[in-house]
Length: 257
Image (cartoon, rainbow, N blue to C red; front, side, top):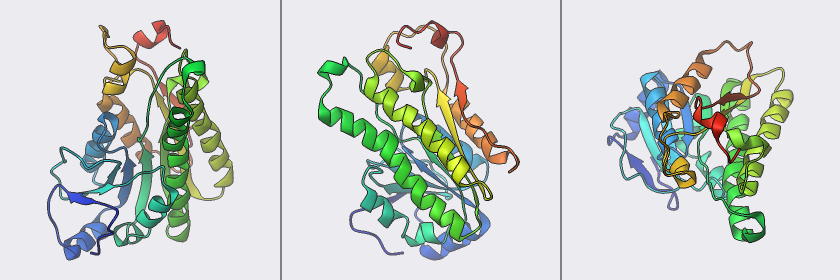
């Protein structure tokens, strides 16, 4: 399999192109962005357990990899539309029976709006919003050209409706709501189902950056992974506009929201 110079390739287990073809024939594929993050890693593991072949996408090369023959890592900046286009032209993606995409890639930066830099604003929108759009755009094209069926899941946030000192982040995540609902209307008549899962406080470095002294039980990454795995199993006649998952009762008391 040819390697694109600007897209690093790393696998948990080294396999040759012929083995890849056999795996792709036996397993449908799910692309997961932000795959080396806390939520992304949990999602990859759960999807592997469910029998999918996973293409794990992340901006940086993973420090740790999941040891499973059914996962292949790709280094990709989802905020770069040209790089995303090239990624979807790779043989590995082109020959996949794409069951779905889960966009876990995301950035969080907080602060008073009047102190926020233009660079920080643009970075959040590029990764959280535009990155999801670029991935979905090419995934939809792939699905429509092949089986015309699949699941698109964006990771939103409980701060979709706004949060103190999180104007850029809340804006980038609330935009996903409009994106998903528009895609649902656009894809009516197909079996491609766009959805959004909006978690509250998750045990992760992102939540710790907001509050590093959380002394209550909050959402585990595996909770989100279990939900996403379940969504893949739901009948094609069912669609979900948005599923909000809150840490009970920490998120109900949160002063930022």
